[in-house]
Image (cartoon, rainbow, N blue to C red; front, side):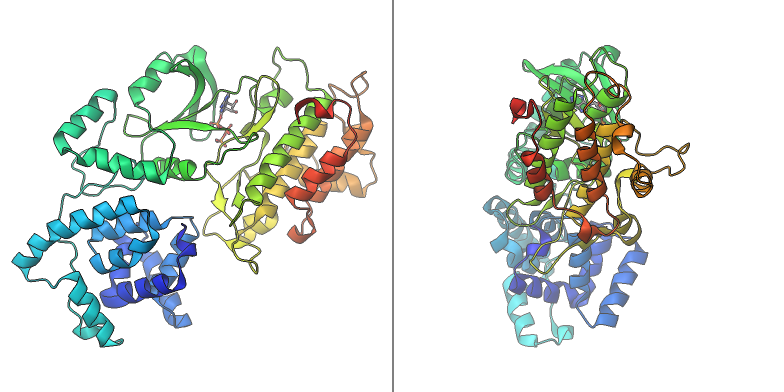
Length: 492
Ligand SMILES: Nc1ncnc2c1ncn2[C@@H]1O[C@H](COP(=O)(O)OP(=O)(O)OP(=O)(O)O)[C@@H](O)[C@H]1O
């Protein structure tokens, strides 16, 4: 469950508990790592709107798609028993172990320090009816040295040193911490079903990160070909092992959905010198490579282009229309469309995926930061931080034009550097879009002017300036389905 899905009564009670004595500030600053500036900003906004500052915090943090289990872990670190009790009904039962463990350890402290027990705290706070001054402190910050699941993606401030995770280290850590390591791993298993792999295994799988196995480089690190337990894999080795990467991996594990057109994440590795993500190996490379790089492969035919556009639309409409809230990929571009040996496309790189608007009356969410690749992003997202499935639709539109023309998404030598602006400009001039067909096909026996026009027409529709004028991915998918293209059933 996401933070923004918290039932009203639980949210209200949590706000009440954490507003007391400004515990929300400790949660925001020490645990969630918001800056003092952000905390003051939230406090002032809450005051201006006459709402709970905790609620402000949850709204902001919730926009980053955090889950109740994460909040539970942070409150566990704060030892805020009443808040943990309040959240208990909505977290997986495996997390309850943390609560009972903490309750037993804190009860010893409670005797020594004469701090009231959580139940009496609860009762007295209920009685106080808004008069927080008389409420005894909850049991907090009394037990140092509690460790979090190393793989929870949340930094454990109490950890004495980096926890290197290799096959041998795992056994070491379980002997040092007894059952705790296993228990923590169990907890992570319930957050995500994606298996954790050891760094040493992955080093071996890629033959010690051999250059000949290098598949490509991206903003986050390098991707290597490898064989893991006789399975061909692509290992993305992230540049370092910082908290941002841990967070990224956690997000990716949680955002992993199974679909023919979504690149499967086989596993992850945390705790080694670099964090790694392990994917299915896509031996057809990326659409980017197939459109631009001179490889031994022949140019993509129109029916292959059609099948790729169809598969990507299918994957995206799935993400946008899953039960509950849509998942917005946020970085659709040819480099993130991977092709298997039959050129079946799979959407990869969910590092920037975020949950979209929820509830019938919501059309978008306002995000605090914009991520992604600029030439593929619409104005409302870049300028107003307005995130909706229409962001992916726009990016998809740019990709459609790229597939038809092989023009790049941004080219400063063009009168309109952005491809989306350029193609709309050409359209206004009344240019026949078939004249922009990919030069490797244009004028050859493989040329298909009508399909080129159809691709650009979808591209124009998807990249409309006003997001409500763009089609949904489902509409695009249906439109593609209805097209009569030779060879279209090849991969459907
Ligand atoms: N599963 C895979 N199978 C085969 N090749 C892959 C796979 N994943 C990535 N690659 C190759 O590695 C390259 C780099 O991928 P990566 O996801 O790191 O970066 P990117 O998407 O190009 O850029 P960025 O992540 O900065 O947006 C890709 O362009 C592709 O050629």
